[in-house]
Length: 273
Image (cartoon, rainbow, N blue to C red; front, side):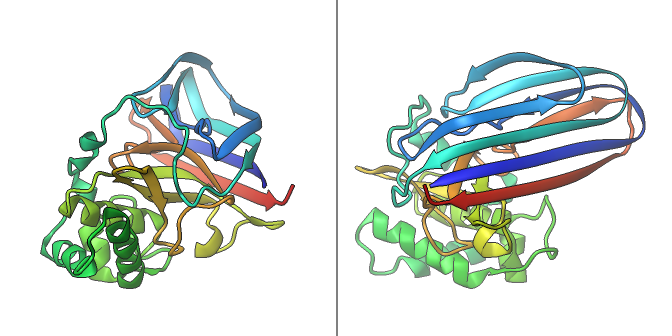
């Protein structure tokens, strides 16, 4: 499948800032399930700095711009050839040990309810792969997909209490439940396309997120509770982290104390070869 991505993010400032420094995880992952055909990341102001491949195998690129600036735009355009590996991150090179992803963060810390959900979901399961699938199904059932009811800083525990959320909340909740069972888990950011159409709804949320769980003997396997499935050929993987903040495609800071407003447009089209 060929997945075409158009992703534009513009940061507006209510008064000019002295400068902006950003860190980008906007380059698709290298693994057997996807090959970049063409890809570009352009920033309206400033210059690119150093880039490196981190311990998780993700490409991180820095960018800085000197002010005064009232806005800055990051534009991503490209095509990726993908194939369905049933969620398995095969052929991916990284140096980070899986055990590093057992550490909790504030958004993924399990409370009593998440702990009970995890243990009830895997009752009777004897293999880790089965446990992972059961956890994904349990989170999908416990948290209905509903945009607008949660915020960027909503935790997994809060989303479970609400019983509603978006892909970020589903991923955080799955990570939390997996770590309850000592299964390493991490947050993944990327894109999800619908065939021959702009992404619409939970089944094809263009700027998307899911989780990966480490299964001994198989490695990292992706699970998407928002769609109750494993990532397939419609998905493009960008990067990973302990939670949404760690895997954010764009992180940055503006110097000058201005109020920031962000506009994002994403179009993802998946077409058969």
